[in-house]
Image 1 (cartoon, rainbow, N blue to C red):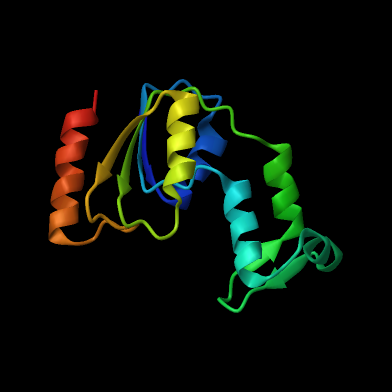
Image 2 (tube, helix red, strand yellow):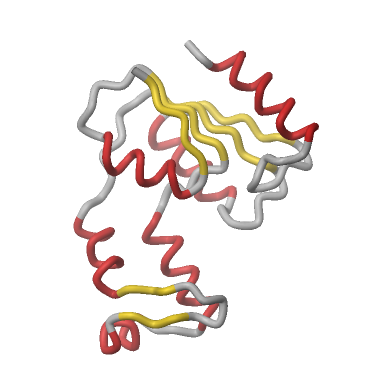
Length: 140
């Protein structure tokens, strides 16, 4: 069995399937560090941990809900990912920092392919062709 997931789906897949016996994971523009992602959203919105803790939930100007309970859940349930993983990342991804991806790749010995000019969302004909060719190369 294998998993293919993208963006936040990659994080939730790892959380849900980390104890399963998977042959391979293919992640496209994956969110790999939920705590860092939440803290980044808090920083962008000018929200401190103390404020979030006091209020429980805060809606940002971008209509995103930040939750103290969820931040604590993420901290209390770290990922323990041991599945052979290949990652496709767009060079111009504006949501997931490359440094986060490279850290994950190093810690988990994952493969990494970076598409020049690629974005977080693979949606153009060129990007989808690149994704399809990448999948052909990495599927075991």
